Length: 188
Image 1: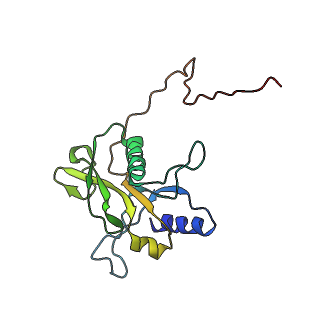
Image 2 (image 1 turned 180 degrees about the vertical axis):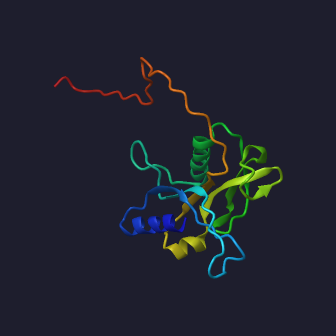
Image 3 (image 1 turned 45 degrees about the vertical axis):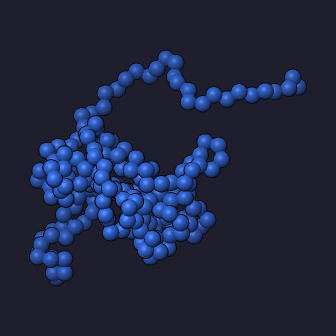
């Protein structure tokens, strides 16, 4: 997330306030005696995460769109979960995350029985926390040089069960339309 926050600040410095970026990759987490040991005694854990940030306005069909909000971050986090795990049941609860604004942050929970038992994840009862979303804390935004509201999400992809392969379906003979345009023109 710090790199993605820096991407928001960089885009804002170039006059591009509307940002929607994400990254999928390995996070290197130190194992062993403690985080200050030198040299490390064990190789780091390398779980795969997806993280994304939103700032400014979402794209609009005609003109400027509405500003991004925490619900957009939640929707993108849920889309990432469903892309990997299919129709897994996800519960959303309000929570406190140090780098997210108090009261505008949530955790994404999945039943622990559906998750990989060999991986260590935070738990809330019988559910495992697989991600977080919310508005970046004002102090974090100030340290990164971000002006205005910014939203973020993170999802731990390695613990999610893999969905079965998607089944292909035929292309419809008469495709749908989500927009109707009518024009009144003069005879000339």
